[in-house]
Amino acid sequence: MPDAPARRKPGPQATAARNDRAVIEAAREVFLTQGFDAPVSAVAERAGVGMGSLYRRYRTKEELLQHLCVDSMQRLADAARAALRAQDPWEGLAGYVRRCAGFGFGALAPLAGTIASTEDMWRAARAAQELAEAVVARAHAAGVLRRDVTALDVSLLIGKFSTRATAPSPAEEENAAHRILAIALDGLRAGHPEPLPGHPPVVRRYEDLWRRGGGGQEPPFRVADEGRST
Image (tube, rainbow, N blue to C red; front, side, top):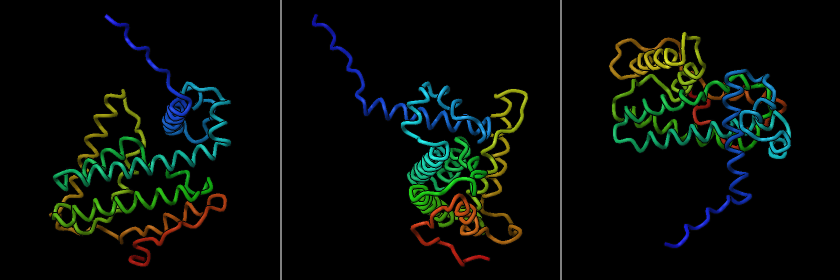
């Protein structure tokens, strides 16, 4: 019997990509559990990389946070694409909300106004926003989502379920989160006789929070619903 071929060692690019993925996932876990004041050394330790390796990729903590924002927007877009592939529009929307809440998308909201926004951040945000609007429009067209719910309403709902509540155990925390999210999703369904209170939230006003961070750039796009609501 011939000898089994030797397993190839990953090349430098594959190793760098793997380390970068590990750092981003570690950053998400560390900052979401310990707060954004947590040191980058905690991120490096959790990722299993040295500080030198981390700083070669991300020169500052702000740069790491900026990349974390881009990664979160890309994951948001991936979740929306999966929702649009779902055969049932409601299940697509509900799965989108569960998936985004599950990886803590909205937990990055406190960063608004504290870090500079980059072109990559705005570009990723725009792509994710357009896909989210398509998910909501599809649910509206199918008559399964109440008409007065907007894509930004859904995004803000996700944000409310992105933080971890105190619970006796991780299992109880997960159980409670699933139950409360199911209640919230039921509130999105079409057929509610009473309209939602207040007015629809305006995307521009939330984007303005990110423009205040360290001279953040203007987004290279026109906000889709700007001027639609006040």
